[in-house]
Length: 89
Image 1 (spheres, rainbow, N blue to C red):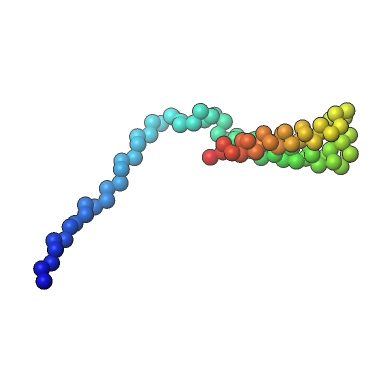
Image 2: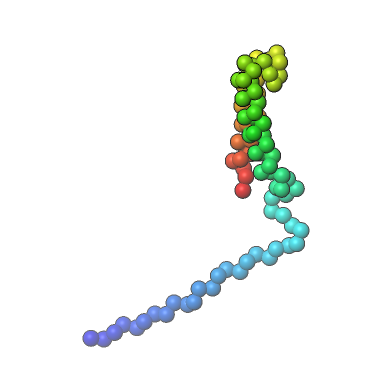
């Protein structure tokens, strides 16, 4: 029985890497990148501490006079940290 011709595939050649310009950045927030993760963690921790403080002091602190809005303020601070978390690379 006759054999078919074998087809050789060309060797894989990876695409060339793009040229990197020294000092150039691809992010709009290049100066902020180093501080991005610590800022988001600090905001989430501050929000948590704010909420715990409000519960422990029966809504008298951290800001006296706003009562239950202390919980909302703590959640707001923590929410900003979580929003930053969604944009973190």
